[in-house]
Length: 154
Image 1 (cartoon, helix red, strand yellow):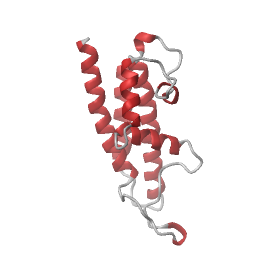
Image 2 (cartoon, rainbow, N blue to C red):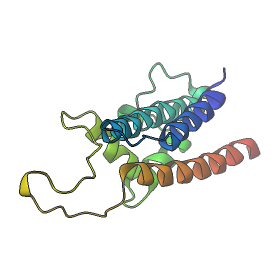
Image 3 (cartoon, rainbow, N blue to C red):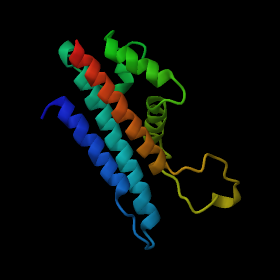
Image 4 (cartoon, one colour):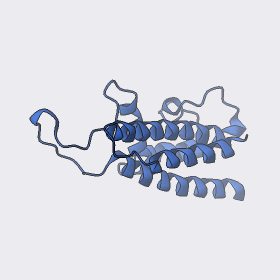
């Protein structure tokens, strides 16, 4: 499978997880949270596959997103474009990187929707992680398509 095909496959699988019904039993909330974090983990794999795809010609030994999107990453035009996108607050990649860092933290990223825990007042956007991730994936797919089109023109 080519890196391009793998990127597409991982994005598709992440979307499938987000669309899976969580049911209405006592495990529905946990199932939804698992699907959200699973989809986010697949999005991380898709990001690394995308990085492999856009750096294929450079034959890099590693494709870790933290390294390649960091300041010490390779000086490849596509990586620079992605670095700028990751630094741009409000972009899909900025959002994704933040959520991936939370995913790797001890608290994870998925949250219960049943109200504030332990008497705390909940403040936030109100959008569920799954909805935000769906929007992120849609924007990512559009950006990836634009990057691929640019690459094919060269």
